[in-house]
Image 1 (cartoon, rainbow, N blue to C red):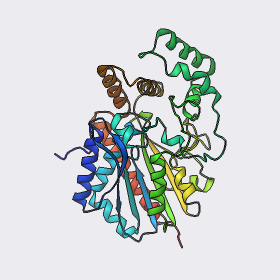
Image 2 (cartoon, rainbow, N blue to C red):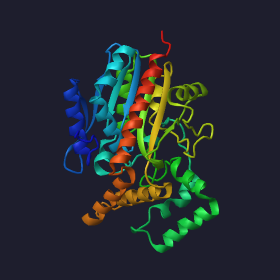
Image 3 (tube, rainbow, N blue to C red):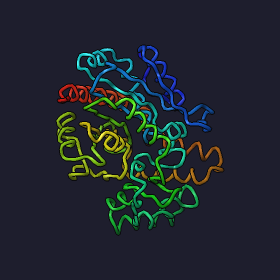
Image 4 (cartoon, rainbow, N blue to C red):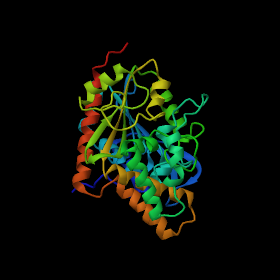
Amino acid sequence: MATSPFSESYLQARKRFTAAARQAGVEVTSHVIPDLVGREGESLSTDVVRLGPSDARRLLILTSGTHGVEGFCGSAAQIALLGDAGLQGRLMAANVAILVVHAINPYGFSWLSRTNEDNVDLNRNSIDFTQALPVNEAYGELHELLVPPTWPPSSDNVRAIADYIEVHGAVAYQRALTIGQYAFADGLFYGGRQPVWSTRLMRTLIETHAADCDAIGWIDFHTGLGPPGHGEKICVGGLDADELARARAWWGADLASPVDGTTVASNVGGPLLDTLRTARPDAQVTAMAIEYGTVPLIDMLHMLRADSWLRRHPDAPDAQASAIRKAVHSAFCFDDPVWQGQILGQARVAILQAVTGLSRSRIG
């Protein structure tokens, strides 16, 4: 029986990814975060391989671990790709290259946290920091409730959150949290004060590998939104109508976007996908995130509150810290072969659809 490409830790995922690359005969370029170590004392690295023709002018980017702990699914899809000789064979015929970016947020991946070493959410960090920062007043009203002084939260805290949802509605509560905020560095969905290491690296990778490409696709793998096992395809960020139409032509009419109200997801400011749109505004860009469903939204947000509380309390007892990290991990990746099979199958289809879409793109 073949070994599952799903890993139990960032360290294991990295070892499996680099081993799969060696087996496939492709070179790995490693970008190590200086002066930081992971949960097992390991170096923290974003590892990159490129597949397909070296002179291809059509490029597909695949990223995992944008939200750290969500990296297990994207990593598994990338490892499976490296062992998929049939899929790789199509790249040569289609004259399409694939840039595989494993663990763009290695700190969060290792420490089972959604955010990076600065508590920054990478999907809120690709904004123009020379301009006035966005203001999220609704989040400001909730911040002290969201990250309470004790964990689990007190009954008063639970009641206060429930009262807010009753008065304002679940959609308003979700929006207040998820659109991002730039005022509370120890809070949830914090966008930072400047581009962080991972965001800068992603731009460098684009400038290096996509400089001569006329058509560029991108799939950013995520988990935690939607029904269990279902991959909701979402276009977010600074896309235009042409990109949205092209994305639906590639990946299907069920692709959703907050731009036209076809998903409850917020159109967040500064998603990582926007680094491509700003770095290569002259190219034909088609980018989406695929969100594999796990637990209900309210439960997912509760786990993010636990993650944020633990960031605030690094001196928490080892047993409590371990329990929180295990619970966060379980909320974003199921240890279930059926669920994992759904993820791998949908990932392969999405990759093949993108390769086909790119092969038909007019360039020149």
